[in-house]
Length: 451
Image (cartoon, rainbow, N blue to C red; front, side, top):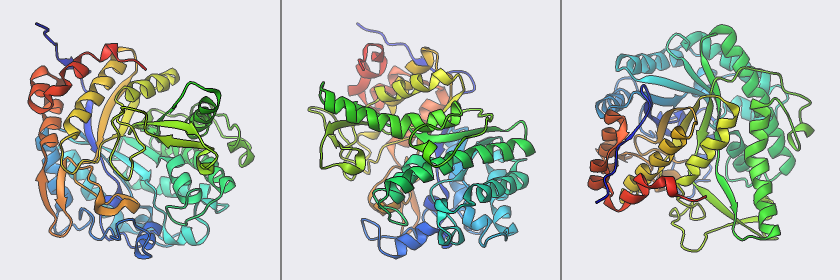
C-alpha cells in the first residue's frame, strides 16, 4: 500500500487571492473600460455595474469579504488601485479616493492580511484615453507621477507593490485583436505599447523606491506555455515566435535591461533598476500549429492537442496543464529573484473541476520550490466571482459564488479546500481524498510528470 506524505510549503508562505479594481469596486465610471462596456462591446451584453460592490464604504462589502478571507486562513490579498479614481482629471488628485483605499488597506492590516497592491490593472482614466492612452508621448512620465502620488499617500500601509499587470495581454487585446478599448488592429502600436509599459514599469519602480526604499516592487507578467503541436519545423518555428515575443522579450527588458526586437524599435534603452520580485500569472498551455489563417498570432493557430483536458469557452484553446506552473517557475528562477504566483485560477461555475485544478497546480508549485525556485506566495484568481472584462458575468472564477443582482455570496467547496490548504500550509492526502480523490496519484506523484 502506497503511503503519501503531505506536501509542506515553506514557513511564512503567503496564501492569498487576487482581485482588480474595475472587476470588484463597481461604478468605475471614469475609465475607458466602463465606456467600452456601455458601448456594447461585452460578449454577453452585460456591464460591470456594482461589480462585487467593494467601493461603497457604507455597505462595507469589501470589508465583509476581507473578513471571510481571514476566516479561511488567508494571510495576503492582492488588489489594484484605480488610476481614474485617484486622478479623475489630469493633474487633479482626489483625496476622497485615497481615503477609501486607506480604509481598505487598514482593514486588511487589522485582519493580519498582507496587502499586495497593483498600480495598473488594464484600465485607463478617460482623460488619458482621450490623449491616446499608452500611445501618448508623455504616458511614461504621467504613470510615474501617479505611482509617486500613490506611494506617498499609501506607502505606510503597503510593502508589496506591483507596477503593471500583464502588459502584453493589455497591448495584444487592445491594439492587435481589438477586443478591448480602443479596438485597434496594429502590430506596430502593440509593440510600441509594450515598450512604453516596460519603460513605465522602470520609472514607477524608481519612484516607489525613492520614497519607500524598503518596499518590494515587481512587474506582473502573464506567462503561458507555448508548445508546438507537432514535431515539425513550422510548428516549432511559430510556437518559438510566440514564446519569444510574448514571454521572453518583456523579461529581457525588465530583468536584463535589454530592449530587443521589436521593442527596440520604439525605445532606445531602459534604465537599470531594482526589481525585488517576479510576479507570474499562469493559466495554462497553448499548443500551436502553423496556419496561414492566423496572422494576429504570428501564423500560429492555437489548437487542442488530442486527449488534452481543455478549458470551457471562451478559452477552449487553453489546456489545463499543471506541469506548466512548474516550468514557468523554473524559467523565472534563472533571474535569482523571489517569485510570487500573482494569479492562477480556473473558471468553473459548477465547481466540479476547480478542486482538482487547485490541488494539481499547487503540487506542481511545491515541486518547483523543492527544485530550487524561490516562490514566496500564491494568489488564487479570484475570491468572489467578478466581472471578467469583455466576457462579462458569463465566466465564474470565484472561490465564492456571487449573485450580481442581489450581491449574495455563497462559498463553493473549493473555498473550503483552499482554506484547509492555507491553514495547514500543506496539501495532505486527507484533503485530496475529500475533495478530488481521482487526483491522488497526480498530486503526490508529480515528480514523474513529463514535460
